[in-house]
Length: 322
Image (cartoon, rainbow, N blue to C red; front, side, top):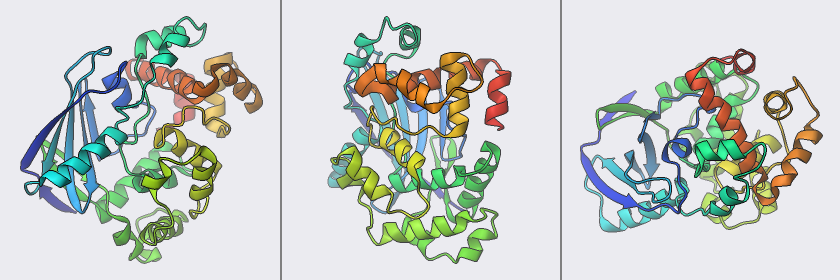
């Protein structure tokens, strides 16, 4: 794997709309670990491909939940010109969801029987699209029909074969490939690194991105239904992946109509303290949160995974199998 030193740097200060919880927004304990990012309290690192440049990003918490400030240091191989920085600045505002106003959600449900205590802990948490839509879909593909441990192995195998290592701020992190590179790869070459039937999905989706079958920037302004229609054109992508994408990449806080089986088990325990309740019952429960129903579920979901960081939860470990 190619190793690239990023020695040039540029700092930008952002002011997210309050409330903004730095750690709970940028670090999701429920996500499986991958070598393209790193986190410690008040700091977050991630790699990025933008306009044919390999970038390293370091985000630092410089404010408070009610008066947030985030410093982003951009590391690159060469000096970046003003136009590049201006374009990148807009993209970073989107990717890290700085402009989303969730103050109404926090106020509305601060005394809710289920959500109240969770909001108190994580007020200002919101989803972030730290990766591009293409990269997010690659992650969804390796998550299909696999234990978390197996998914981690597949993604790291892909990084080792097709990605690069970026060195910046004392970190060495993996960086995704661009879709046009993956589109040229033979399917057998992908099967050789043990991704199984997903080889066809990885290659076909990469080709679809190269052929501009999907435009993530245009999709940001589309309705939920229009986004669904676009994403379902992609090879190997089903309803559950579409819904994840709506929430995590397009910030649709109402997108909650599909519950995969393993999530059904976890939500059953979290909300109803039962091993398994029908998905219809979980969906009905979420309706009380109206246009914030998926955001409410996100708070309930992430809260248990933050608890798991400090103490093992036996019933949860059985479901995760990391």
